[in-house]
Each structure stands twice: as structure tokens, then as C-alpha cells.
Image 1 (spheres, rainbow, N blue to C red):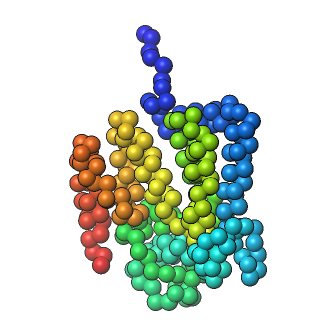
Image 2 (cartoon, rainbow, N blue to C red):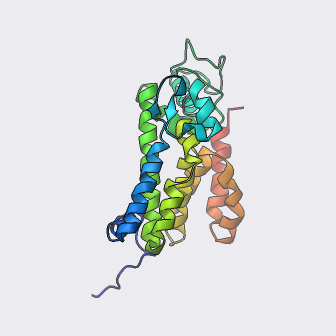
Image 3 (cartoon, rainbow, N blue to C red):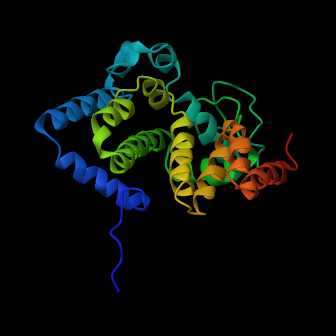
Length: 252
């Protein structure tokens, strides 16, 4: 039996990322040089490279969050989630914070109020506690860097002729500085939306899982419910609302 060759539109996520890598390796010297420069820029956004009173990443002064807040409480957003997982593991309400400086009962060096949905404590915050606080933060930064590269390769695999533009979008987007320095979770949410949309747009049902997980990180994806309804994905629209409601029972 002869099968039709796969196109860029019907390749799986992993296959599309592979296509993106091959497109990069097969591109002109100029495009590869451009991509390499942008990758170095991305590395300069990581929260490493500066020490002492001017601690942070090389590009830290370019944003308020990373240039000012990072110097006083680096990874503050990450630790707000991380320590909520620690409190849950010790039978303490993850939303209860009696001090913003840490201390007895807290695993992270300082804590802030946990503002995510209750279920996020168990599927995201608790697993982070496998590692000590600072090692967990460093691992999260490496994981975030991997997500950025994977997203770049996925987009390039779908539209290889726009490789130069995707390199600029994914590696030269300066808000990533604050995202990485403060240990935020917006990049993970956006990645789940991107991968979910990519699968859903090609008729795959598993893409809904990405969208549902994104709604459990932050509620912003709920704004997409009208579009999901029009696309005939009504089970996703209703499922998200039901999942949020059921998993929030017992919490205030």
C-alpha cells in the first residue's frame, strides 16, 4: 500500500521539532549566524553572570523585575509556588503565609502568598520539592530554556521559511528576562497553549490536555472558551470550568 508523504501540517509535535532542527542546519550561513547571535542573547537573559550588589543576569538592568526585585528577592515568584508545595506536604494550608521573609516552617528562603488554583499545588508545586530550593530554581531555569528552544523548533518546523523571524520572536523577546529571573510560570502556560493549539488544529484530541493544564496554571486561557465553542470543542469549554470548580472545593 502506498501512503501519501507527510506534510509540515500533519507531522506530530516531535516530528515538527525535528523538521525545525533540520531546517536550521540546512539554512544559509547568514541565517545560522543570526540564530546563533540571538541564542547568545537568550543566554544573557538567564539569571546568572552577575554577583554581589549587582547580582542577576547580564541583562538584568533592562527590566524592573529582574534589575531591582531580583537583587532583593531573586526567584520570588518561583518560591511562592515552591513553598506552597512544601506546606502542602507538611499538612499546612498552602495559602497560609504568616511572614514574607521565610523562617521556621518554610523551606524556601522567603515566601509570598500562593495565588494559583488549589490543584496546581499537587501537580506542579509538590514535584518541585524533590530538589532543595536553589537547585530547584536552577533546574527550572534550565527547563524554561529547553521550552524556548523546543517552541522555536516547533514553529520553524511548521513554517521553515520564517526561521529567521521565529528566532527573533523566541530568543529576542525581552520580557523573558523577568520571566526567568523571578521564576514565573507564564512561559509554561504559553507553551501548553501553543502545543495544545498545534495538536487541536490538526484534529488531535490530546491537544485539549495542554489547554486544560494551562487553565490550571493561570485562568487567562479561560478567555478562549468562546473560540473553543465555535471550533466545536465544547467538551473542553465545559470541562475546564468543571475541573476548576471541582478542584477548588474546600478552599477559599
